[in-house]
Image (cartoon, rainbow, N blue to C red; front, side, top):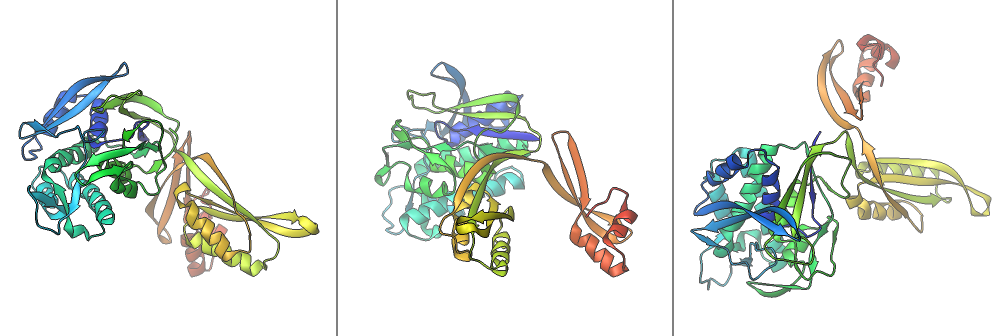
Length: 407
C-alpha cells in the first residue's frame, strides 16, 4: 500500500507541504514545468534549495505578477487573510469563494484536483466565517494573499495526484505559541481560523513563539490526512523536506515520508466501564446505541464486583477523534459513574468489498489483505437471505458457493 506520511514538528504551511511533495517526485524538472503550466493568473513557481539547521530541502517560492507575498507579518510567509465584506470600504480587490471557484474552473487540471482545491478553500472560508460570525458568502480573501494561496492549494493537489498515494497520514501538528500580526491586528496563536480548522486534530504548542501552522496548511492536512498519529510501520522509499521561510532554533520544515506499508496501522481508543445495577435488556440497548453511533466494536465481559456482586464490563473501540462522543453515550445509556480510557496502536488488514455473481444471485464479498495474508468471505446478510429464500441451511449455501465459503 503506497503511504504518504507528513511529519509536522514545526507546523505546516501551504508552501512547505507543496515543497515536501515536490521533493518526492522522481522528475522534479517535469513537476515544476507542470506547475507553471497550470496558468494560474500571474503566478510563477520556483523551487529553490534551502537549508535549515544543517538540513537541506526545497523552498517553493511563488511570485504573483513578479512579486512575492510579503512574509514579514507571519511565521511561514503564507496566510490567506480574510475578512467579512460588510462595510464596503476596502482599498483592494477581494475575492470570495465564488471568485475562487471561477479561477479554479479556468485551470487545465483534472476534476479531482479542482474539486479538492475548492474543498480546501471551503474549509478556510468556513473557518473565517466562524471567526467573524458572518455567512460564508460574505467572506473575502485579500488580494495580497489570494493568488499565492491558490497556487499553494492547487500546486499541492496537482502534485498529490501525481504521487497517487493509497492513503495519507500525518503527525500531531505543532501550532506554535504567542501572537501573530495579520490584517485584523494581533491575534493569538493558533489564529482563530486555524484553530477552527484543526478541530478533532491532535495539536500542541511549545516554547517556539510564532505561527507555525497557517490556515492553508491546516486545511490541506484536514482535507487529505485520513488520520493523525505516530508514524506507521513503513518501508520508506523517499523523504521530502519542505522548508519554511523563517529561521527557528529547530529546523523549520515539513517532512514527507513516501513508502510502502502492509495493512493499516494507526491508533484506537478503548473505553470501558463496570456495571452491576443494569438489567440485561438495558445493557443490550446500550450496546445497540453505541454500535448505531459508529463504534468499531462493542462487547461485554462477565466480572465480579464489590460486595460480591456479579457484573459486566462494557467495552467499546472507537476512533480517537470520536472519544468524547462515546464517553457521552456511555454516561447517557448506562448507570456508570466513570469511564476508563486506553489509547493504543493497532494494525489491521486492508479491507475492500466487491460484488460477485453466484448461483444465488449477486453477493457481496469482503476481501482483507496485508502482512502476507489474504482472506475472503461473503457478507453474512447475503448468505442468510439466500438460505431463507432457498430453504437451505447457512452451511449448505456456503458449500454450494465454495468449499471455503464461511459466513
